[in-house]
Length: 319
Length: 255
Image 1 (spheres, rainbow over the protein chains, first blue to last red):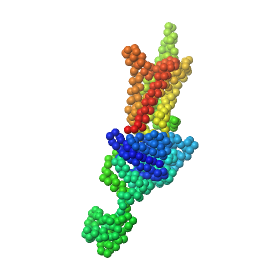
Image 2: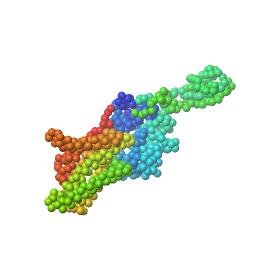
Image 3: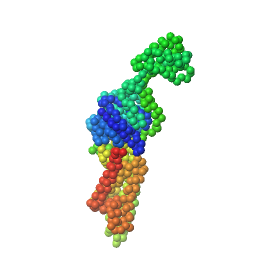
Image 4: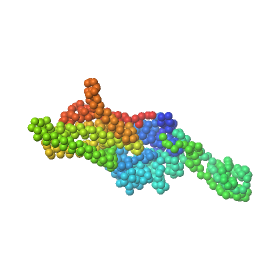
């Protein structure tokens, strides 16, 4: 549904993205991850036909965003990061304007607008001026604006930013409910959100893609071992490490930082093998004081930190 | 061409914000003052000439009231139209709404025309309200409606050029004040260029005179449709709109 090939964008001397390639299958929800300034918004602006790329091609629904921009624009719903809205319009007339501008036939317009307001839960503010709404409501008006024409592709730049936890959950449910008949690409830096909503991710850093694929396979790709955190008080660390290494299936044992003199270790074993039972038995047999035994969840967050390691302090500004 | 939704949106924005109301009120206040002073001056002059057995021959309402009134209008409009048009694109840029607007399936040209026509409709409404002044004259004195008709057609044509220049200026910047100043500067230049005609050599002077925006309005006020004046205004409007379209499209150029 979305095909991006070798996309490059320069702003004057600054290269915002270079050689970005990825594709999104129909009906999929893809999370677009990256630290601030990585090029997420730039890519989305190109996909939404707001600005041209300096090089490479991007196709949405089979149409080139540069040469067949009108065809692409008929099929997308876009929500920019800043949620730009006409503050002097009221909610319902604004959405009617958007529906008309996006070519929703006259007969369907009222129904589509009502439907979009329902789904985004803004029906109760439909007669208010947009400028008088709270940030959460504006965000949802922006989302309603994107879905009002029922587009095949949704491009959402940080759709849950600035919402309270309850609203975030609602918006996530809404986005999830769009999967299937809509293709969604959404950017965010809230990682748990991605695991909850998206089927696969594209991670971008400093303008280049550093990892992409379904979340599970990414985790496996970057962390081939299962990890267990063990806390044992008392015996000297080297004795513990040696003993732990002898457990069948264990491939590595290393120290974890500890503050109170209690030894903490990370035991890595081949994937699919749970060594916790054996660690417990070992400690019992040696009469060690086992304080904690915990499987370390290998999450997307760790993948993310791993691939953009050292880049979390990138400048805040998105160009 | 989806001009209509843009037109409707712009009209809504003009009238839900105080912009349209304030501009119309200010314009009518100033225009009303000019009408009052011109009309009362004319009344005084005609009174004097009625008492003077020798004079009073050349007086008529068209020349005595309407022509000066229309020429005053053109100056007021020159000052006010930049304020009507400044927000059209500059505000969308400032607030970022242009990012959404230009990703809707509407051609740049339709966006431009929708905005131009909305400003023009507001202008036409503003001008139409001044029809009250001829109506007042008509109550007191016989009136030729022909020159009034041509006068108003002239005002509409001239207003279209003002608006087109304003739309162009607004498309250049995200700052409304800069937009207003740029369009004011352009309009002012094309107004005063006629004045220097007297000092230039005759051939150049004719060219300069022809370029003057307000110069072309006078024949309409006299009740004459001059093809050259109509063509001048139409061309001026088209060129300004064309430049505005280019400036909008510049964003889509590969960089």
